[in-house]
Length: 278
Image (cartoon, rainbow, N blue to C red; front, side):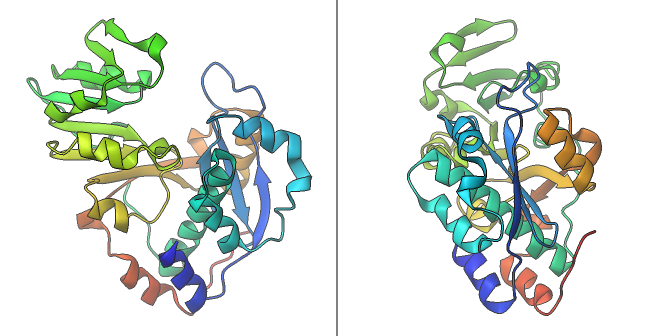
């Protein structure tokens, strides 16, 4: 929040244009897990909305939230609150402001080489996965690596073909590499999970909502941040509202410490520059 505050202090930042919601009942392919907050300059930030009753509340309260036209930084500060509802809105606003900063600075993270955080799993390695991401299983298991998945849902625990699901995060201590969802940034488990992964040489945090400033994450041990870079805003938002695939409207990006110029450099480049999308 301090970095976004510094950005707002040095440069006029856009206000909120609209909040876009997926259908109330996500489809079987999990295409309705994220909301999108759009700023007046066209910057968009995503946030996961399936924690607690966040999505239901967003649909129920709708226009009464009074989000359109509000101060984006003030909304982003709700991320520091205790409730999932406010944190989700705040995180989306923070991600939108981050995209605004990137665009004004002329910075575009590089494309991701794969969907598993570029960890390049090898035979004999122990890979950790925080949250069961079934689409990622094949790439990891085909490498010959051993896979342990840490889950919060007790009904998923147990052995499966080629991997094991556990509720005990301490089992991550023996992992060489770990891939995690950015949902850790919303459910207050980041510090604990990073502690459990202290011996891992690679920690990739991936997901559509992994669009925040990465400085603090890199400082705490995250190796790679991988998210969605929207290239067709209107197409993306239409697909999100319909609960359909958004893949043709966004690229997957991957950002590491070596590729990232740092917040101060971005801020210097962004000051005095304005980018507006149609």
